[in-house]
Image (spheres, rainbow over the protein chains, first blue to last red):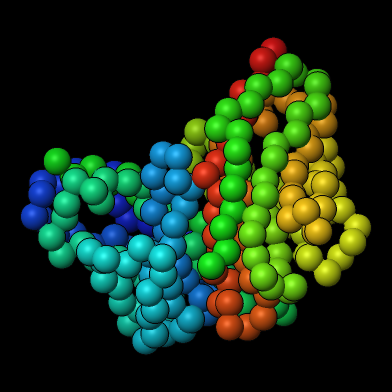
Length: 114
Length: 117
């Protein structure tokens, strides 16, 4: 099992450019999440999904869109990147089974917006 | 809204010694879970230990143990016999219980732990 994978691992964008981050999990998990990590602020939830075809806003959703067309994939899009979106992005998934909801994290994507 | 606070941006410990990382949280819920995650320089988030709020007994995992003080809303992590491989950023995290929480985590700001040989 690869677990949770993220593509790409690093990316540099110019202000105004768009991009999509891909998250894939092979554990048949129902729930998936996107977080961003900034110095001194821990991880903050951007969007999440509780199943194929569903998405919901987290704590810091502005400037991002997501899609979950397939159960195993969760895409995070930046339509017009801004320097404030420079961050490390983490995807996570959990089964939701038995109320345990342990989250498994991907390796992260470091995004720099210049 | 729930908040999680780690008031120690950095901590250091000598190899083989014991160190305690602090975490406080604020919630009005009675059903919740608390976690400590380790993030080494590789950036990978690794679950260290979990505590269910309804359990009075403090969780332990080998050299890692917690001091869970529910009334004080405090959840500290004790690392015994510290090893060089323990050097990392440590995050405290909270999750509300129940199905409608959807497993969402609220994280603290993190504590950087340095281990000196």
